[in-house]
Picture 1 (cartoon, rainbow, N blue to C red):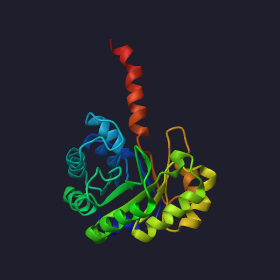
Picture 2 (picture 1 turned 180 degrees about the horizontal axis):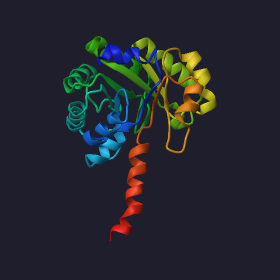
Picture 3 (picture 1 turned 120 degrees about the vertical axis):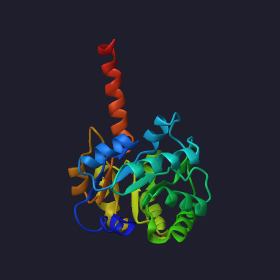
Length: 233
């Protein structure tokens, strides 16, 4: 599936449900389970690489890890790349395209808090100008991580759409806020599902076009490993 075909899936057909992978093995299992594409989780991948979430993974290591996932599966891969790991937008787009990924998730916050939306939009616009149609850009809006309001999320989402984002991801948006976010931002909306809910069915009913799980699948499995360990000793 090309980037164009992946982009088209955001507008027609069943909503995209993307359990997030963190390495080639998990990507293969998810693809074998019928996922139409693989979305990576930056937090889970960072931990597998020996780092923590929050832009702490060196860009080269994350890009190499993404390339391994791309090589491992036949379905398209969209990579969670946090806020770009400090790379200039043009270099970021060029290096990500070299991995074979057809999409990326970019977020509008750093450890210091939300970034200026106009600056982030400029970054997105340069990524779009460099990649053309070859990257599907999912712009993550982090207002709900800092007690922001739906109005804040709408304002940021609209700016990012104008800058060239294909999909807007207001992570952890309350379920009851999703319908208004969908109608007011315009275009496809990515929503966050969790092991304990909200469920994909609930999010789809609220208008989500794309659903991902972030680090929750990896965290759930690591918790299961911790609980298993006593029985192995």
